[in-house]
Image 1 (cartoon, one colour):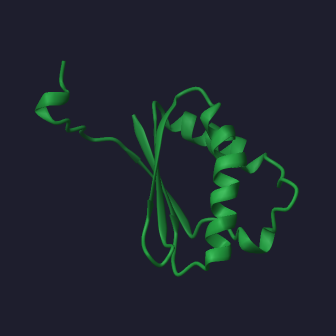
Image 2: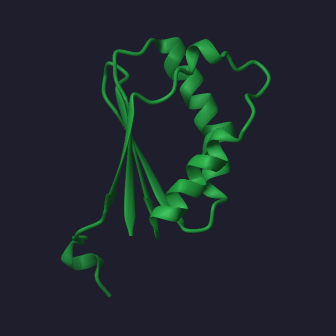
Amino acid sequence: MYAQLTYFDGPRSPEQLAAADFAAGNRIAPAAGAVPGVLRTYVLRRADGGEVVVTIAESEQALADAQKAVLGTALLPGEDPALLPGPDRVEIYPVHEVFEPAGARS
């Protein structure tokens, strides 16, 4: 299993956040979610709009395929590229350990 951390440094304006949310919900998540091996994504956001997107996948290749799928999407009508500058950095890590609460185990 692998994790990708995608960083969007703050501060980000309300317009940038609205554009990012629209892109994520209507273009990015559908493209990445259709890639086999992508298991889950968490979006963590601070009050200043700084964000870390954590994507968990079965393999490093699945993360690469998801990146390719997202980058291959065309902007939707009304999307302003000036409001979507892209991430500040992307890091990929192999998952070393997974901890689950005792009650979550079967």
